[in-house]
Image (cartoon, rainbow, N blue to C red; front, top):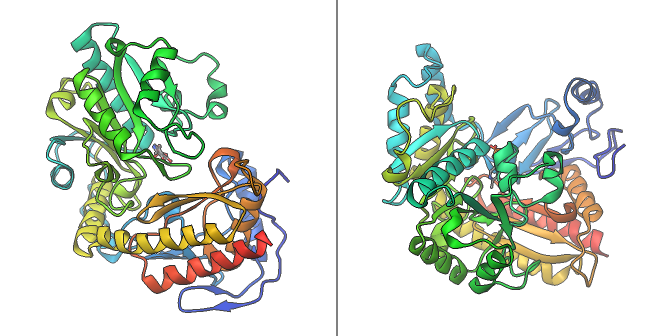
Length: 455
Ligand SMILES: Cc1ncc(COP(=O)(O)O)c(C=O)c1O
């Protein structure tokens, strides 16, 4: 067994039956073992490593396996199911599209794409004038790099091509998005990185206590980067692995500085967007607007769809056919995304995320005071990153974090495996339609588990 994997030997678990959770078998269920083994045999190892729940059905904020067990989902898959799992409005929209037989049409015009592009421009700030639809978050990042670099070099000549991003950032797994990422271990395979991609420290206030904007400028000059060479600054609205935000003053100074040097400010909203942080878009917390924004995950609450949005001046730099993707604006994905956004609007899920988010953040800050094994809790709205550490230090305790997720899984609470530095961070990010009672129950169980492991 690799370190920090979830055991495959069924363990007897005391039955649980509440309005939201049901555990009525050994875990993993003995009948699931052949399926788990089959996947391990036929699939790349990197596809594995999550708690061994066979996802069979999902409803709003719960996930069921084929054996009658049910978990409260604190993962939203991986921060995707913002409107909730399996919503009937989304299913009906997709079923209607399926029935029409129009499942793909490349870049030929279709109604669903028009409706979604219009909706995306409507729900984003006025400066986001145009959208380009893609399939994954990584693709959206690649596209934003391309747009920024074209803009930089057309404004400032061949010099203006550097892509500035941040240490510990995660922007995806494709070559360009990984070069913009700031986690060295993830990109060791690249061997020869493009020197025009430069990372500077992220001012999270915990790992890096230096959060003044001047330190950003200092880091650029230490790396011999001058403003006339920079095409864009790219950053996650919050760093995905830990849910840590930069200080508001830092972001406002960055915004101003980018504008005064014709540098494109790109915000990666792949995790933060569509209500996750208690506002439509995470950057609203900073009271700034980006020049380009990359969206994914919660944009569609389930189907593979992503988007880049920005000013027309940036988005229209490339001519017909120069920015395309085979599955761009897939009709079924567009219908699902539109229906998911409608649910977020109609059910005020952004406000739900804000209200329940305040409860979640306060609850977890309180837990931090009780548990010495928690170094810090970051987050806003319905996303939190809880960093487990060796008591009295900032050294991540990946084993403890892993054990806690195992206990959660046994108790009907589903999180994904710990992430972040040293695998020490547990993320809590339920679908935005979760009810107060379910969230209270899940966080209460989480607290009990942490306190037990802390003692
Ligand atoms: C902040 C952020 N950006 C980009 C990506 C890449 O998205 P995808 O996995 O859809 O390519 C992710 C995925 O986790 C992410 O969290």
